[in-house]
Length: 275
Image 1 (cartoon, rainbow, N blue to C red):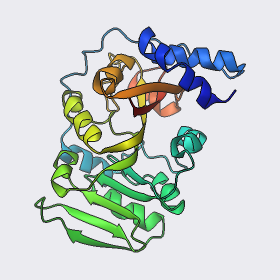
Image 2: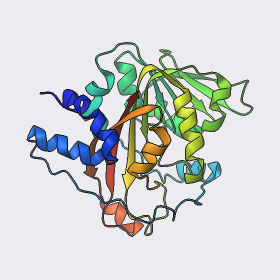
Image 3: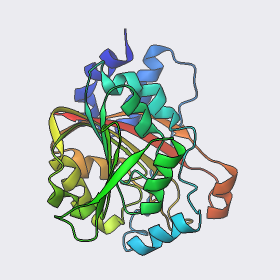
């Protein structure tokens, strides 16, 4: 029995139990997987970060000052692991990267023949992506969004918009088959999450797949970002129109996290699909 068939067979239990990741742990047990699957807790104080706000200028300063510990030079390992599940063998997909930074995964998809569109507030981050990936590009103003620019690879299959994500719908960027949300929902100010999810859901094509990465840690010890996002919050934001499956949760604690005052941080990977 494949992982995909097990997931499909448990879709009803996922919605019934209210604990998406618990159902995923049961799947691993069924498969006889010997890897440690963490029974991460939901921290009770979920409101402590709700009024936390970072401005766009503060995010731009992070790039200028090279405070980009969120960037993964080798790409995201869970995406790599579930890439075939995410793509389903389909060709010439349109893939959206919200708050893309200089994510190397954009080139992964482009090299497989897919069309990549990203949005990022930092022009520096976008330029660094093209430079580090050795890609030539052009740039032009976006008439619909004053002050915004679009950067396009010479091959034409990577287009990165430099603007506020919430202004992006004005550019009429079309719909997408796939959305890879890593470092986006967890970076958006908690008070903007509903608006963010509405933008994301407005971009989906029929048959879409949305891969979402979030973090769980004690929010009383670290103010964020990245912000703590609960299982229940994912369901509240996306559950009305999406089936939600927790593919995996892993301990991603590193030495740098000690400065946050925490001793555990769990990453959860969700697959959202059309109901």
